[in-house]
Length: 153
Image (cartoon, rainbow, N blue to C red; front, side, top):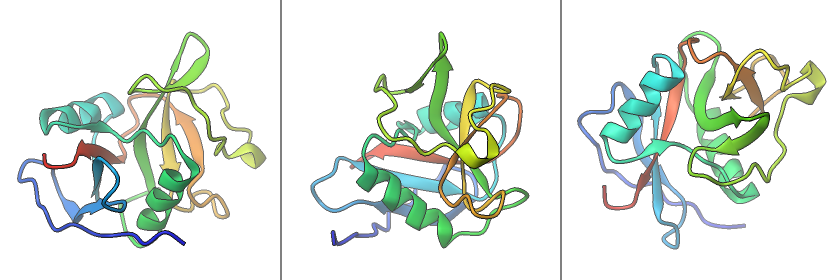
């Protein structure tokens, strides 16, 4: 099993951080921030970009597992869902960093993606039994969010 490491860097402008930065092992180039609350997907993305990052793009099973493990230890308001950097472009779901969706983590037992939105959230456990799975929502739903920041930002 890969050993995970937690950094203690605190960017001042990200609102209501729950546990500072978290990061994968030393070989990665990213750190992550997890908020307790947020705004719309677009506003949350702008917050991340304003701090030198973007909403998280999870391109490997290992990265998804790391993020899922982190959100299982956190408490947020309302539905326990986080905006992530996954959006629908021309009918295809892609990460906002330009990468294709290569891991399938949709809440398929709940009919996701249902087509009711063009952005995605990652569920802590809502509805029950969907730990770490994705759901499509309209942009205007307010949720907490996860930023991915280049290491050293």
